[in-house]
Image (cartoon, rainbow, N blue to C red; front, side):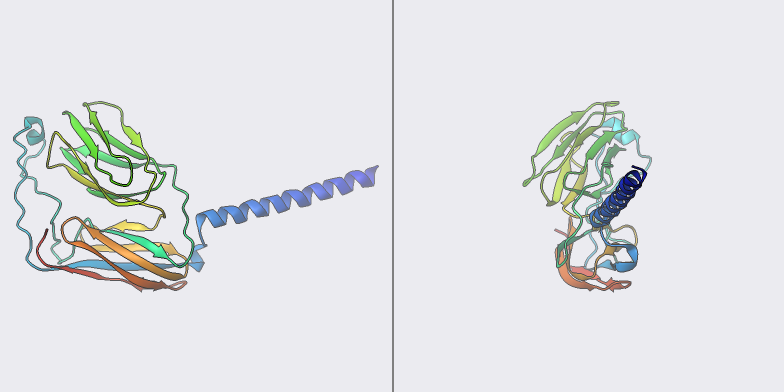
Length: 251
């Protein structure tokens, strides 16, 4: 009887170990390859051409909005950084020769209405990931998500109202977001089916890490200067360079 119990305990221990190994392998598959096995893509988004002349935003139509800014505000579309690069460029993996993680994060991506502007101006979210819109302004806003592939929706928010949470069911780059009350308020949402994307800032650079070795199509979207894409090969432990240059006047 004792030997039978010992044999049963040994078998149970082996089964538990195998199950744990299987779960670890599954978690690794869902999370993607280990850091040591991956590479990255990095670059800058340059602009060559006449710099757009941006005019101050006319906020006097809403005295509340006007009171929130001590100095004139300018549109975010059409901006060019001081070093000749572009901010607010959405860079993402459009295609890949290898399979990519597709499980969306549980944490929401947040779009905030602050100072009668949308923050951030350009953002990315995965298919199925929560997309949350909140307001901290003492005036009424309207969130008009002008999707074409996904469902379009239009919701008003009063000061102090709870946040609005939605999800997107399909990839779509890019979805404009407008406020029907304040026409200068603009944002853009890139809905993607993988976690590999970035938005350029004040230096115009981007970096996408954690990519498995393989061939990729990297696409760049800008609100005012069009789109571009190129093929890049990623190798383990290396960072592939991918610079883009946009030319011509703003649209």
